[in-house]
Image (cartoon, rainbow, N blue to C red; front, side, top):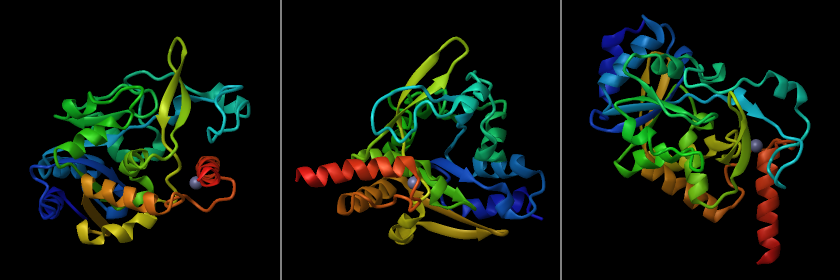
Length: 268
Ligand SMILES: [Zn+2]
């Protein structure tokens, strides 16, 4: 069983003591941790400069009857899901699919959360990053981290959950989408919604030299500087505008990107 001391020693080995970090974690991947997500987070907080995590709430999303074209979405198709949508409020828990760790971070007494109704982030001593977010620029906290030598930390998860790759996709000019979220008194349009991440692990091979990696318990932990991640993703997409898309025939967002790229190729 892993405890605080072993986790702390291992995380210290990543050399992130003074770095602001965005983390994605699977608690299960570590095997047994004494004290669970709380212990994992205390060790992380003590071995990084600043920590933020995504506390996304997809359960607020509404699909309208009509909307902009090629938006990676079938309009008017989600009546049942729309009925189950919940209005965003600041204390709304992060979705279960985000895992136990970000929700535990959000519940730390000293934690703050940004206010995007779908793509909020929680952090401690991270107000300057969290406040960079706007409705128009939901992933701005990641850009703000990168500006001050921020790192992304993958704790027992791969790049398919690496939100920072979405930031780099936008830098590379890849299509962004519009989504809609339920608030207590209205529905709000949310621009800048990213594409699908199922194909993202293909970037791992480009990052081997720039990634600090170690094994803790059963988990592989990987730390990469955000700026180098952005450069690698932009390089890939510039070389091949279809890079990092998934291979599922019915993936609406990846197919929407393919439609844009096919149009650009016709125009060239
Ligand atoms: Zn896809």
